[in-house]
Length: 277
Ligand SMILES: [Zn+2]
Image (cartoon, rainbow, N blue to C red; front, side, top):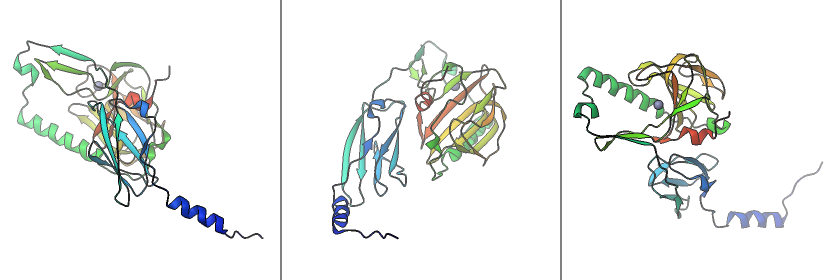
């Protein structure tokens, strides 16, 4: 039997590597940095990282996800603080996008901000809080390592970032992609995940499902007709989670798919890549 005994040379090599200056945070595919993009970067397990001044999770293997919001500025500051307190600063150049804007002027004020009675407002507030709580669950496991596929394919009737300007007042942008398919069409998990919320009748989004992909990355599926999973279920990528509907404030059968990373809404079309034909 042969035994391995570290030679003096080998030990010197280990000590030399250990004393090398630490490598700074490396953004993978920085050329893909654009508003609404989700990028991966490599840091160190013991480091802490901020993006635009906000702390983001550093995975046990040192990976960091950088989520760029729809209105991210052209340069985003990244700061990595190493275990020894040393700070490394860099800026990420972010491509600015042109979103689809629909301007409507001369509307009566009631159409710009429709009045709501107290009971409806209470219901909406409750549902928003439920969704926020479901999205806030921190699962320390990179379920997203499966990568992402489209939950279903079809014509897009709505895209990320598009918004209306009513009487000069910009409304909340559309954060999802709307995929048109008939009611009953299967919706598949775009990546591995855990079902964190099923709400059959949300005021706005009707049948709503939230899938947790780990570390604060999650998908929401809106206007669904039926659910084939339950809260707490682990679902592998490709598993049928339910079907397309037209529930809630919807004008026709479609799936609205949204992707959020720790409160930052990103473009699902950039996460899933080109839709297969
Ligand atoms: Zn939509």
